[in-house]
Image (spheres, rainbow, N blue to C red):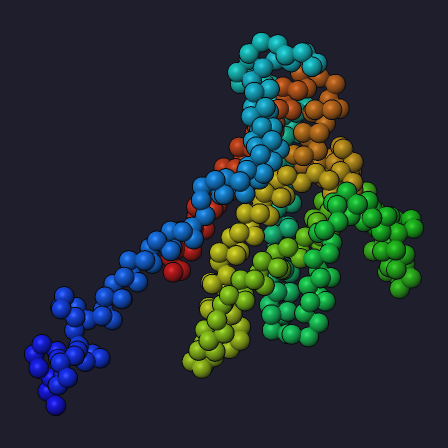
Amino acid sequence: MVQPAGGLNRAGTRGRGATPSAGFPAPRARQVGARQARPRQAGARRPRARVLLLFLAPAFVLYTGFVVYPLLTALEYSLFDWRGTARGGFVGLGNFAELLTTYPADQQLGRAVAHNAAFFAGTMLVQNTLGLTFAVLLHRSRRFKRLFQTAYTLPYLVSPLVVGYLWTLILNPVFGPVNTLLRSIGLESLALPWLGDPGTALPVVVLVNAWQWVGFPMLLFAAALGGIPDEYADAARVDGATSWQAFRHVTLPLLVPAIGTVSVLTFIGNFNIFGLVYAMGGSTGNPAGATDVLGLLFYRTAFQSGSVNSIGQSSALAVLMFIVIFGVSLGATAYLRRRTRDLT
């Protein structure tokens, strides 16, 4: 039966679904009130600025004390003349000019930069290729996945100095197990002085460095592969693509952000390398400077050069290293961000 216009039933009372006198239904009023209450609840859940500062303060203090302050100190030291530990007058870019034009620093600097570049190229080729290969294989296979991930990542948890000294013993030409094994299987011609030959020393150190750090890119690539839906590769196979074609044209382009991150971190690590090459080639980059890098050159300039102005020159070298590493990393990051935006 049709209700009266006033919303009253026969008994003269309002029905269950009748509208109030204000002209808005009761459920609608409750919805409006709930919507108005939501922003207050969301705002109440946001952490206050004091809480954020409390959690960020320890990291900020550590970063400032161990990164920012040494960088600013090195920049300041590089602009002054030094007589031992006594600071002299302001020389501006004089220490930089002396470092780039004075023998033997000028020749050693170019050689060290070339070795760092070769170190980066070789590590990128070996370490990241193997890391991507292992990540793909472990992503497709579930058996013993955790075991192999742990085995591949354990070496980079060990100090590079320890790794370098261990591999120096392993590659010893007299009693090292590598040459002993080669002689025992009739390959005595391949039992070389691996770290004593200028032609083999740098490639061997690159391979040892790649062996130590192969687990790091493997973990990053594995995480990136886990974020790619399997439907993409399945759709490519339905269209007739082989497994390699699906990986080449579907999976690999989606890994560009991870590859970019690994490349930048590899560049930073290899242009800062010191402990491994120091353990395997000494402070002079033996044999005959074949493994000399910027880290070793900085160490010699600061502590073994015998120069009166060693603080000024070593600080200038540290600033140059920072400018090169920071500039290249910044440019590479900007380029990779553009590539990532193009993919999306």
